[in-house]
Image (cartoon, rainbow, N blue to C red; front, side, top):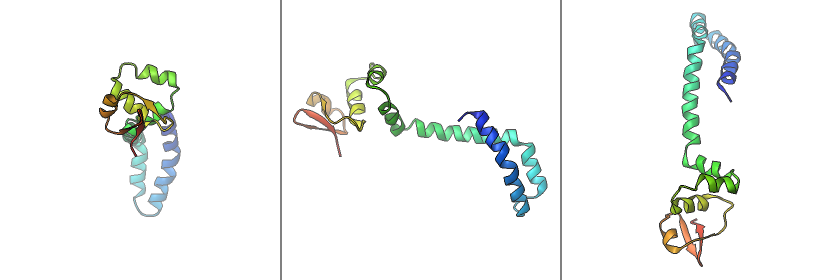
Length: 125
């Protein structure tokens, strides 16, 4: 959703919401009119806070893993080409569709969230 869409929704939703609040006595009609007069500033604050929350969620480790999991294998290889081997192993172990990974025991030992069984690496449970 882009900024224009958010502003459009707020322009439609806020006036009746403020009228309802004024009608219930939660604010005066002058306060509601003042808020509507300052609607661009209010929308800017809402969009800024929303953008911060969105950024926090998307850039969490879970969000990053989900983003990589949705990529085709070729794109994953390209995106992780410069990463150290232990980071690539951790990414592969976090992907739900990966069942077995063949690697060395030394490399597997460097990644805390994987276990080695019969020469294969699987995510720890």
